[in-house]
Structure formats: C-alpha cells, structure tokens
Image (cartoon, rainbow, N blue to C red):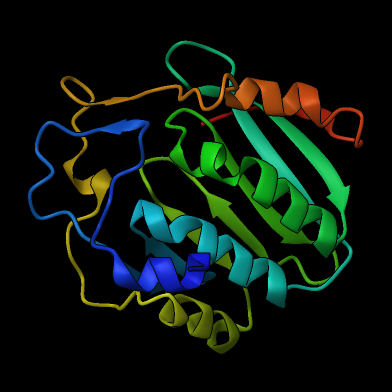
Length: 194
C-alpha cells in the first residue's frame, strides 16, 4: 500500500513528538487562507501531502529544515538544500518518517521559480503557499482531507501541561539530518526567531 492509499484508510493519528493531555475533538481538516491553505493533517497523511506537493511544483526547488536553537524553541537554525524533484523525493523517502513525527523541528519544500512552498510547522500544522490554489486543493482532497472544520492540535495545545518532543528513529534525530545532508550540499542560512 502506498502513502496515498494508506492516508485515505486510517483514522486521525498524532505525530510521535506531540503530546496532548486532552486530544478530544482534534481532527483533520483544511482551510483556505489568503496565501494558500492551512492544513491540519493526521500524521499518516503528512508524507503523502509532501509527495503530492513535490510532484506539482516547478524546479528549481529546495528543501529546508528548521532546528531549535534554544530550549524554549523560540530561535531556529535554518538549513537549505538546493535540489531537483528526484533529490527532494529521496530526502522525503530517507527522512520523511522522522521529519513528520518529530515535535521540535520544522521543514518544507519550495520552488524558486514561483515561490510556492509547503511548510510543515509545529503542532501538525502545514501551510501551502501558492497562487495555484485549485492545483493544490486536488492534492489535499486526493488524500482524503476535507474542509469540515474541527479542532486542531494547536487549538488544544496547552504549553503548561502539553509537550513537543525530539523523536529518535533508528538511532537518528532531526539534528543528524542536518549533519548527514551536508555532503549533498545542505547549508546553514541563519537563525530566525518566532
């Protein structure tokens, strides 16, 4: 079963790196925003969402990774990898499970040609920035996400009792991704503060 088929058949799942004390009422949905879409997907649909986006954007493109610089995750070190679609798909195939399940990092893919971008932010929130909304609406609907508004993980997250955590998968964390992809051309671009 491929990611898109799997994404259609399973119920809402939380990422491993997100711990909510009260997950009641949280579900997946999307909403249109001026610059594209905000998507609140189940963990099992996040990789398929990235695949659908990569398939539809124009080259040249890039992969980016934001890693927390401080304990409170207010500052992130940002890394970029200039790439082609095959390289983006290879990154997603190799590191996709770790990237979508990690609770402290953020990542995405984008096009230099038309500024389209998919941004996997925190708390299972994904932003799709595009002027071609219909094209990417098809991606969202293909994996079974609808616009029936529910509560998002961000709506329910209480920083006093809930948590996001660093995930380790097969002995690696997202910090290893930054080191491992240096040979492929991943470079440090600076630090951002949110």
